[in-house]
Length: 238
Image (spheres, helix red, strand yellow):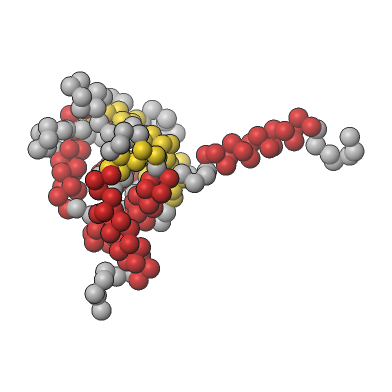
């Protein structure tokens, strides 16, 4: 082996590491500068690469998403999102009672001190800014109402908050953006309680899916949404 030449084992490791990095930063890694862009790209990727698993939906597994926690006021979501769905998910995440379908995430949330209002998360991170235990879990109440979002972790790193969540599944077209707005609200509440920047929200979606009955509406959304992103304004606006 000549001077400066890496051992064979090291070369093998480098190849393996690059392959592993490609796996985790590949086509299913969706990071964008706005929640709206993340939403439309998640829908498009799920439609283009998803596989039919039950004859009723297309599913893309192991998807990573990221978007700014300062997500309110997103113009693409304002134009194409469903305000009723947003209001329903806000009730599911934050209201004391269940929504019209009997869902309530607020009653299922448990922080590191057993609370569901993020106060224990903020208190822990004030006392121990480097803690990895500032985690909220959404437990299974039984009866088939397991939340789509299951774990949310709050980390303070480099002087800003990082919010990371795991979802067992999300309807990419109809519900992802509404869930994401609520997660962003949680991130901002924790960041404000700590007096740090709110940073980003990133998530791992085990099953990103769309329903085949929604495909005509999805095609319309993708066509008009992409034009909106190019033009920066809705169709017909001066």
